[in-house]
Amino acid sequence: MKLFLIRHAQSFNNALPPEREHFERVSDPPLTELGHRQARLLAEHLASGKNPELSHWTSVEATASQRRRGYNITKLYCSAMHRALQTALPVSQALGLTPEIWLDIHEHGGIYLEEGENREPVGYPGKTRSEIAAEFPGYIMPELVTEEGWWTGGCEDWPGCHSRAIRVATALRAQAASEERIALVSHGGFIDALIKALLYQSPSPHVFYYKFNTAISRIDFREDGRIDFRYWNWVEHLPQELIT
Image (cartoon, rainbow, N blue to C red):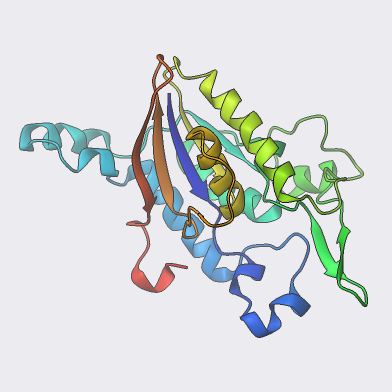
């Protein structure tokens, strides 16, 4: 099985300058206009662009590869956060795939804002089932996405995030023998936790696997339990001015 880890496109919160970040953040931010441009370029690239695994082939192999450009993704998952749902939309249209919401791949913390006089975290429910269905018709939703929203955890701590990452890593390893090419549209903090879980590394705030918006990383799973870390933070689909 081949896994493609993709961070969502630029969100409203991502674009806030540091001096405004703590006061203007929203609980479930949408994409910026720049973020929508990133998502469209990502979709075009995944559908027909030249991916890194082809870059070292011989000239004969390269000629053959030109007839089958793109990443040949077979399954598309995204988190239930608005920015991931929006990023997955043009990707699904370009690839002809139906996105499936995987609740466990949401960002660390969940849906919350630091509010009140002491800026204590306050949880929010996230988008409801009918809101998601209206904006993203056809997306496959788990039963836990209800009319009350999908998030009830207040503000999740880092141990909670790493516990989710271990669950997701276990589920991915269970598909190691398959021929699937799976794309996950997720988030920077969670992808960091997932990489540590896949590599059997201890959670640590002193090491962070950073990803640009819409960056692509590939990991191959083998039947014997080994994994091949093929490439990280690939953003060749973005012009320099759109890398965030």
